[in-house]
Length: 250
Image 1 (cartoon, rainbow, N blue to C red):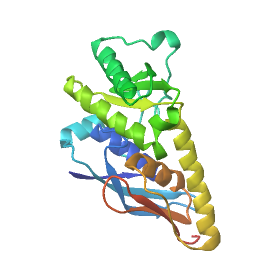
Image 2 (cartoon, one colour; image 1 turned 90 degrees about the vertical axis):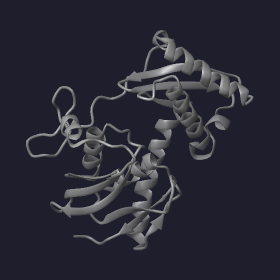
Image 3 (cartoon, rainbow, N blue to C red; image 1 turned 180 degrees about the vertical axis):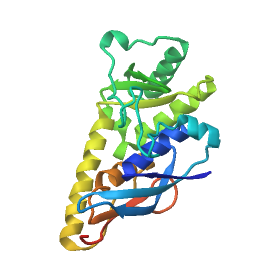
Image 4 (tube, rainbow, N blue to C red; image 1 turned 120 degrees about the vertical axis):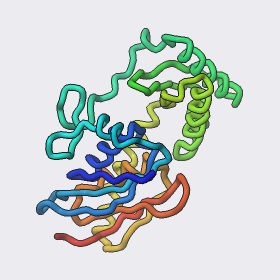
């Protein structure tokens, strides 16, 4: 299915789409349809097209929307506009499985990592609405994470398939090890800014390494408010490349 959303920035439009469609950030791809500047330093309006295999009825979209009276923005449970609360990591005492599902998904993850030849410890890292984070600890963290996180992404995909077999396909299982997810996001933000500076300095576009949808979105949203820089995704399949381009000062 294809949907269109509008916000003051690309980040706001994507957040609105995720909330209304009830999807995770890495479950849909985004095409920028329109980007209008609202002033010297900020863009005033961004219109996006979302491509997803998930169906959402108009009634469900309206119900899920946390819009204000102007039709843009997202509100959290307290009615405040913004992306919501920061993730709260569990204490050591809280990281033990709380129910049968958590026991099985933790045991399955540990069994798979152990079968790979890397003895491990798997605990619950965080619990959120429709999300369960697991922490994988092992002496071979680099092998579990893999180049650009491809190993842990593959393991996470399998964990979600297993969660579906347990009848919990409503829960998104997120695997992490040595805070890789946070470190990767920080690295992508740094790469985005450095790329923008290089493009501005040379006047030539720059094509970044292939990334999954979530990683590409970090780059897009990081550079969204820089008025003389624009980005677009190129390629086919899950892993596409982001092209960073100079469009001149307005």
